[in-house]
Image 1: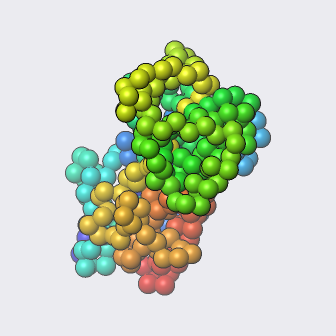
Image 2 (image 1 turned 120 degrees about the vertical axis):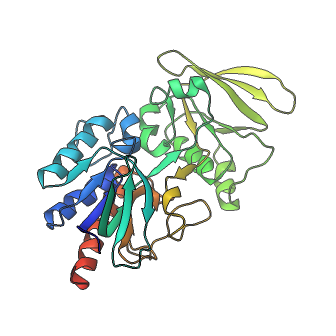
Length: 313
């Protein structure tokens, strides 16, 4: 038997992880939260957040995550600035084990996974330099800032089509850059896209460079059939080529879908392993918003608490 078994350990420090910590702390579960290599998660790179309730004047992502952290610590959460490098979620001894990057071992009756997901980018130096300066991977989050401006979207799947049609309600013109001569999106999404008059599709087209110093001013494009290059003026570029959930550590133990998102039991945060719960973008491939992540973090803490009570732990 392990020397000391925690009631709950939380892996991840975005809105889902910190919300889980707030609820778990208030339930006297004495949670320990491991921040990972990016304390605060994806929101740390978001310069303006205007759609999270409780911030009427808006805020920036880093400030909001600092508020979350302070609130979690206020109720007794222990925050450890470390990544988890190894887990054992099937010990058969009534508890789970995790190891940090410094090889410290922790045992726990419940684990809440809030490791999030990372947006896939094109890998251009200019793109990375201009993230949050006109380059975005979330049209719902940032589209409002480009109201009445001309923007571009990169991608050919459902997300790209959805982003383009969403932005078309805000922007006079939306250019969709598709690297193939057809869309991968579902037929219904294609129909909606084709019916949106102010979306212009550029087939066989790739972004070679994002232009601008302190803000996006345009893109340099290449037609991959003809090798013809051109420059287009844009105020913003939305990259919609998918997300990768940060769930690699858990795949040997938990059921995931074909893209790596952890599968939870419908209407709950419960995974297929007893005592293990998932929340936020690690299990949500649909909404991927800070407020929905926070909501599922609350659910995970409540589910963990009920599990502990039910099993007299």
